[in-house]
Image (cartoon, rainbow, N blue to C red; front, top):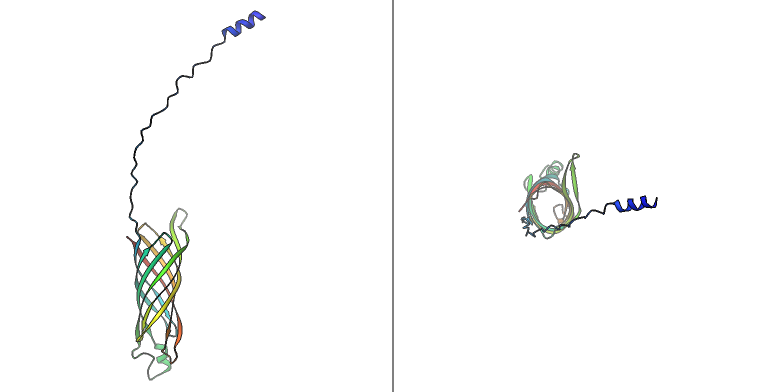
Length: 202
């Protein structure tokens, strides 16, 4: 038994040589990242409705030029125009309305600062999503209406949906606050504007 055990130990094969470990030599390469335009400037057209206090709602259209300071902060200049009718007053006063003509043009411009408070995505179906930005804004400007030029405070909110890195659709709700003296007494008016428009970035 002892002889058999010794023979078994003698016949045991030695462990295999693991061989030489090969360490690959990888050459370092300089990778050039692609460069993209910053696209900080935006230009947009919009249309919608403008509710002039005491005179009803009319269509409005205008132009916006913006500059995006950071990803979340932007400034924007706006110019827009609408026609306001005093038809309701002419029905009450047969001898004439508030304006010398049935309609008066209202134009305004302002500069606002905005902040993106709700960055996210808007889904179109189950497979398609686009980046979106919900924002708040406020600023000052001037309104020219019925021969009166009034300093205007503008505040509101909006939603911007980016379909590409250079094209977006946005919707805004803004209140234009200024004083008027058309009905025999000067008072502050709130004039609500609801618009939608197209914006390009470059």
